[in-house]
Image (cartoon, rainbow, N blue to C red; front, top):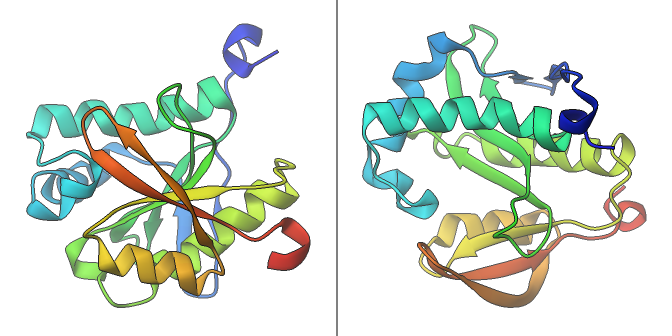
Length: 179
Protein backbone atom coordinates (compact mmCIF):
# COMPACT_ATOMS: atom_id res chain seq x y z
CA UNK A 1 0.00 0.00 0.00
CA UNK A 2 1.44 3.38 -0.97
CA UNK A 3 1.65 6.19 1.61
CA UNK A 4 -1.22 8.01 -0.16
CA UNK A 5 -3.47 4.94 -0.01
CA UNK A 6 -2.54 4.55 3.63
CA UNK A 7 -3.33 8.25 4.32
CA UNK A 8 -0.12 8.66 6.27
CA UNK A 9 2.23 11.53 5.70
CA UNK A 10 5.84 10.73 5.04
CA UNK A 11 8.42 12.62 7.03
CA UNK A 12 11.05 13.74 4.55
CA UNK A 13 14.39 12.71 6.04
CA UNK A 14 17.33 15.09 6.26
CA UNK A 15 20.63 13.79 4.91
CA UNK A 16 24.03 15.31 5.54
CA UNK A 17 26.93 14.84 3.20
CA UNK A 18 30.47 15.99 3.84
CA UNK A 19 29.65 19.55 2.71
CA UNK A 20 25.90 19.81 2.23
CA UNK A 21 22.51 19.34 3.85
CA UNK A 22 19.73 17.61 1.92
CA UNK A 23 16.39 18.55 3.45
CA UNK A 24 12.72 19.02 2.67
CA UNK A 25 11.93 22.07 0.53
CA UNK A 26 10.61 25.12 2.40
CA UNK A 27 8.70 28.18 1.33
CA UNK A 28 11.86 30.19 2.04
CA UNK A 29 13.49 28.30 -0.89
CA UNK A 30 11.00 29.69 -3.41
CA UNK A 31 13.07 32.70 -4.50
CA UNK A 32 16.13 30.59 -5.32
CA UNK A 33 14.02 27.83 -6.87
CA UNK A 34 11.97 30.24 -8.99
CA UNK A 35 15.15 31.99 -10.16
CA UNK A 36 16.48 28.64 -11.38
CA UNK A 37 13.17 27.55 -12.92
CA UNK A 38 12.80 30.92 -14.65
CA UNK A 39 16.27 30.77 -16.18
CA UNK A 40 17.62 29.15 -19.33
CA UNK A 41 19.32 26.61 -17.01
CA UNK A 42 15.88 25.01 -16.51
CA UNK A 43 15.52 23.93 -20.15
CA UNK A 44 16.60 20.44 -19.13
CA UNK A 45 13.54 20.16 -16.91
CA UNK A 46 11.08 21.72 -19.35
CA UNK A 47 11.55 25.38 -18.45
CA UNK A 48 11.78 28.25 -18.25
CA UNK A 49 8.77 28.62 -15.97
CA UNK A 50 7.09 31.56 -14.29
CA UNK A 51 7.02 32.04 -10.51
CA UNK A 52 3.57 30.48 -10.07
CA UNK A 53 4.59 27.38 -12.03
CA UNK A 54 7.79 27.22 -9.97
CA UNK A 55 5.76 27.34 -6.76
CA UNK A 56 3.50 24.56 -8.01
CA UNK A 57 6.52 22.44 -8.92
CA UNK A 58 8.14 23.03 -5.53
CA UNK A 59 4.90 21.79 -3.94
CA UNK A 60 5.03 18.82 -6.30
CA UNK A 61 8.49 17.90 -5.03
CA UNK A 62 7.06 17.59 -1.54
CA UNK A 63 3.98 15.75 -2.83
CA UNK A 64 6.17 13.17 -4.58
CA UNK A 65 7.44 12.07 -1.17
CA UNK A 66 3.89 11.53 0.04
CA UNK A 67 2.66 9.73 -3.06
CA UNK A 68 5.71 7.59 -3.80
CA UNK A 69 7.48 7.37 -0.43
CA UNK A 70 10.62 9.02 -1.83
CA UNK A 71 11.58 12.14 -3.71
CA UNK A 72 14.03 14.97 -4.15
CA UNK A 73 15.65 17.12 -1.51
CA UNK A 74 16.61 20.76 -1.45
CA UNK A 75 20.40 20.75 -1.23
CA UNK A 76 21.83 23.58 0.84
CA UNK A 77 25.17 24.66 2.14
CA UNK A 78 25.80 24.86 5.88
CA UNK A 79 24.35 28.41 5.90
CA UNK A 80 21.07 27.00 4.46
CA UNK A 81 21.53 28.67 1.08
CA UNK A 82 19.64 26.62 -1.55
CA UNK A 83 22.02 25.14 -4.12
CA UNK A 84 19.83 22.72 -6.06
CA UNK A 85 17.33 19.89 -6.00
CA UNK A 86 18.60 16.31 -6.01
CA UNK A 87 17.07 12.93 -5.27
CA UNK A 88 14.85 10.19 -6.57
CA UNK A 89 11.85 10.60 -8.82
CA UNK A 90 9.50 8.57 -10.94
CA UNK A 91 6.29 9.35 -12.74
CA UNK A 92 3.98 7.32 -14.97
CA UNK A 93 5.66 9.14 -17.88
CA UNK A 94 9.20 8.00 -17.03
CA UNK A 95 10.75 4.65 -17.97
CA UNK A 96 11.70 3.76 -14.35
CA UNK A 97 12.87 5.33 -11.09
CA UNK A 98 15.58 7.94 -11.53
CA UNK A 99 18.32 9.68 -9.60
CA UNK A 100 17.81 13.29 -10.73
CA UNK A 101 19.69 16.53 -10.16
CA UNK A 102 19.23 20.21 -10.89
CA UNK A 103 21.86 22.64 -9.65
CA UNK A 104 21.25 26.36 -9.33
CA UNK A 105 23.62 28.81 -11.04
CA UNK A 106 25.36 29.81 -7.80
CA UNK A 107 26.38 26.18 -7.23
CA UNK A 108 27.63 25.22 -10.69
CA UNK A 109 31.04 23.58 -10.72
CA UNK A 110 31.26 23.05 -6.95
CA UNK A 111 30.53 19.31 -6.85
CA UNK A 112 27.04 19.80 -5.42
CA UNK A 113 25.29 17.50 -7.88
CA UNK A 114 27.91 14.76 -7.56
CA UNK A 115 28.00 14.69 -3.77
CA UNK A 116 24.22 14.94 -3.37
CA UNK A 117 23.45 12.43 -6.15
CA UNK A 118 25.85 9.92 -4.56
CA UNK A 119 24.00 10.35 -1.24
CA UNK A 120 20.61 10.02 -2.97
CA UNK A 121 21.70 6.83 -4.76
CA UNK A 122 22.98 5.35 -1.51
CA UNK A 123 19.64 6.20 0.12
CA UNK A 124 17.72 4.62 -2.78
CA UNK A 125 19.76 1.44 -2.62
CA UNK A 126 20.22 0.99 1.12
CA UNK A 127 17.07 2.54 2.59
CA UNK A 128 14.50 2.05 -0.18
CA UNK A 129 15.91 -1.25 -1.42
CA UNK A 130 16.22 -0.26 -5.06
CA UNK A 131 18.29 -2.71 -7.10
CA UNK A 132 18.78 -0.39 -10.06
CA UNK A 133 18.45 3.27 -10.95
CA UNK A 134 18.73 5.44 -14.03
CA UNK A 135 19.40 9.08 -14.77
CA UNK A 136 17.90 10.74 -17.85
CA UNK A 137 19.86 13.44 -19.66
CA UNK A 138 19.05 15.69 -22.62
CA UNK A 139 21.43 15.24 -25.55
CA UNK A 140 23.01 18.70 -25.19
CA UNK A 141 23.49 18.63 -21.40
CA UNK A 142 27.20 17.86 -21.43
CA UNK A 143 27.69 18.50 -17.70
CA UNK A 144 25.00 15.97 -16.75
CA UNK A 145 26.42 13.40 -19.18
CA UNK A 146 29.81 13.86 -17.49
CA UNK A 147 28.26 13.59 -14.03
CA UNK A 148 26.39 10.38 -14.84
CA UNK A 149 29.60 8.88 -16.20
CA UNK A 150 31.58 10.05 -13.15
CA UNK A 151 29.03 8.24 -10.96
CA UNK A 152 29.75 5.03 -12.87
CA UNK A 153 26.52 5.06 -14.89
CA UNK A 154 26.62 3.81 -18.49
CA UNK A 155 24.45 4.64 -21.49
CA UNK A 156 21.46 2.33 -21.71
CA UNK A 157 19.34 3.55 -24.60
CA UNK A 158 17.03 6.52 -24.71
CA UNK A 159 13.38 7.45 -24.56
CA UNK A 160 11.35 10.26 -25.98
CA UNK A 161 9.43 12.44 -23.55
CA UNK A 162 6.39 14.28 -24.89
CA UNK A 163 7.66 17.72 -23.83
CA UNK A 164 11.41 17.33 -23.36
CA UNK A 165 12.16 15.26 -26.46
CA UNK A 166 14.83 12.57 -26.53
CA UNK A 167 16.54 11.79 -23.24
CA UNK A 168 19.54 9.51 -22.95
CA UNK A 169 19.22 6.90 -20.21
CA UNK A 170 22.22 6.25 -17.99
CA UNK A 171 22.09 3.04 -15.92
CA UNK A 172 23.74 3.32 -12.52
CA UNK A 173 25.87 0.47 -11.22
CA UNK A 174 24.16 -2.07 -8.95
CA UNK A 175 24.14 -1.47 -5.21
CA UNK A 176 27.06 -3.90 -4.82
CA UNK A 177 29.11 -2.31 -7.60
CA UNK A 178 28.35 1.24 -6.40
CA UNK A 179 29.50 0.53 -2.84
